[in-house]
Image 1 (cartoon, rainbow, N blue to C red):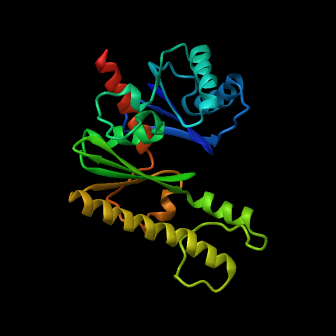
Image 2 (image 1 turned 180 degrees about the vertical axis):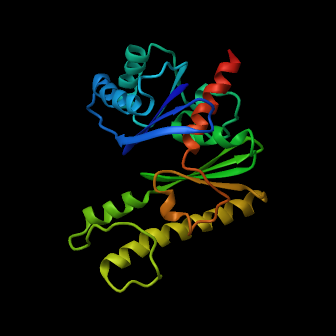
Length: 254
């Protein structure tokens, strides 16, 4: 078994897999002040409940977009699982060409998403709907660049924080495109507005590259946009799948 930690700005996903196909996974809030002991206390409860004991892991993979927690998770893996840790980074992966100005700037989650698709679907777009929404473009198995825009909850919270009278709203798919009250106005603007932006970008990217890209939709908020955004595959485990693939590729290279 391999244990995976996908450390995001808002949530951290703990995943466990044997084969990179089926995953056990749990989400918990990313706390920047936690110690490795506190994280293990939570992880051990989740693992023991699922498996009856803490499994023996042959590898650990970490994809982090929160640099302040990197050392904490490194210590967690070394102290409690006593195994080698693989860090998902563009600068640690020559198997994919990163055709951008500075590969070190690419978030680890995006690197994992690229690894999830590049080997089986060399022409692909990955849309990851989280705290930020990202589009990543893979052409001929290599990374061409992408797009970053505010996530659904980020946009909603920003409106609530920066305006005196606009309420905080829950985000679900609106039934129409003209709102009859303020909450509905906000919901339409954020959910349908984001979907329209994504569909427009997908169309433009396809036209620029003149490729029939396969479009993957993933991320914690992807279900909200499932019926509104053009895609071929909805895969909530795509990032974990890519992390496992990264680990496999790195093992073969040694």
